[in-house]
Length: 363
Image (cartoon, helix red, strand yellow):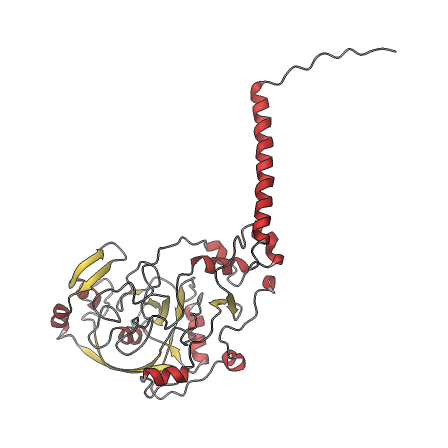
């Protein structure tokens, strides 16, 4: 029998030993991190167990702050209970007039821009008002003025042409009930359809502006001094993850809505009220309106949202087409005086404007 002689194994070079040690340490840290993530998911009852795998890949990375409901498989809304019925609000506010339940009658003379185009024209009311700013918070886009000179503005605008206005407007953002969160992630077309279902129409931009500013053409719905506490404004901007919003009815979109949302339920800011008694017209969410100018796209956003933006009555965003939808966009409806209006089928059947099936993954 032969005995085989074994040569002593040469020790690995220092560099190879270091690489092996680093790889082993990395593997151990990875396993530990995964275990910690699983433990955290187990501690978060707001995330259903069926989503645990998706959460590891980033679909729902943390506990949600709000209870979200999917409206018609496409829009999102935070679950909430009305503070009072529309009929009770009508009686308390006393400004329904000849309008359907939950709406405000708006009547008066609106100051008109001296130029047909207005946007970017130095003769527009928005540009004229800027010259009366006493103190700028920021002159950079989107500029914010702390206080406008009322006497100077009234003298400057005294001889402007006016137009008689008479219409009805929802007191609050859709679904137009005090204490209820607005519906978001809605396109221009969808907003128009939802208004039509109630026997109403999407407000045009002139109606929206007049309901906000009144006959004096105030810069802010509540006056000439910017009040960061009156409306929901000046919240810090948060970068968004656009891919998380597709599909918009999925759990990742819900988690992104939850992460980005900084708004409030309708009507909970009593000083965020226009001269006609319409609430939340600046701040909280952007609102779709119809353009009144010929030759341009009809989809116009008014009011600004909760972020550090202009949030005045006159400015508008005219850069998005009718299919655009985003996490801070909603709307309110208008109607002609004397219109009967109609309750949406969903609300009439359930009593809850947010009631709708949740995504399949959340059932």
